[in-house]
Amino acid sequence: MLPDFESPRTHGEFRKRLYFFTLKLIEFIDSLPKDNVSQRIGNELFGSGTCVIGNYIEGESAATKKSMGEFILKSLKCTNEGKLWLALLRDSKRANPQKVKWFLDELDEISQILSSLINAKE
Image (cartoon, rainbow, N blue to C red; front, side, top):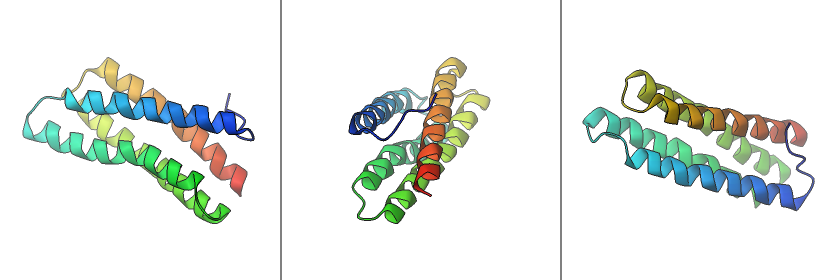
């Protein structure tokens, strides 16, 4: 079930969830093998993964609803990009599939929430 974003408390809980996700992602990226390919994919994943919370927070403080929607859309796009890099790490056997599954599942849920926010703003 998607959260009701009418209350500020729910926004704060989602922000905390994104923050926790980002911390776990940083830890995960730091544990990747030190080979060239893993590090390059890790750098891409770091960019898209931290972009999710960055754009969400920017959107929260946007001056207009339109601007807010644009930031949330960027955040959503970053979840999709992050899924790509995670799948590549998993399928190239550079990361533990169980760890990757948690991140993919979490990004799926986060993207559903972000999509519901975009649809609510329209």
